[in-house]
Length: 115
Length: 113
Image 1: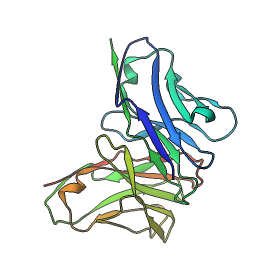
Image 2 (image 1 turned 180 degrees about the vertical axis):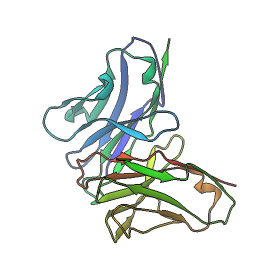
Image 3 (image 1 turned 135 degrees about the vertical axis):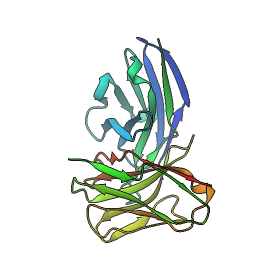
């Protein structure tokens, strides 16, 4: 079974600073990995995903993530934080070996951006 | 194209009451699912469906029923509400394969007293 660990339930950065949100996964088969963002009182929106091919994946709003198989990681980064990036971010892995076609989510990281 | 819609947005129930959370999608997606979101726990899968007439249990199915009579609709029924079911409920849909993006509705916030 897959699992996802997000290090840090809260991360605070200054506007213009680097954003780094950490995600580690466990999977017995090659994973499909996702980052979703949730703005207050809204549903989840896809930021980016890794399925196959290039391990550096670019998403919306200037975010990117790199799949590192040797480290079982899929950390999310953005070079320069903007106030509008304040939200909760979820890393997820597809359940490729259960047949459920569902996502297993991490517990989430709330990003705060200070002016 | 409305995407995934959910009703109601907010509901208060008393313990023991029953209710149905509605979910609909207009993207002709085969796969639909229900998650619940609780603080510090991310989202957990309740039930899912891979097509009309086919449903199955997820990680936390107890106390919930689902049915899928059409491709568009996937209602979630709480049979006898309990305070432990206080949560935010999200419906999601996708075209079907594991690589595909899942599209989420705006959520239903449920409070059980």
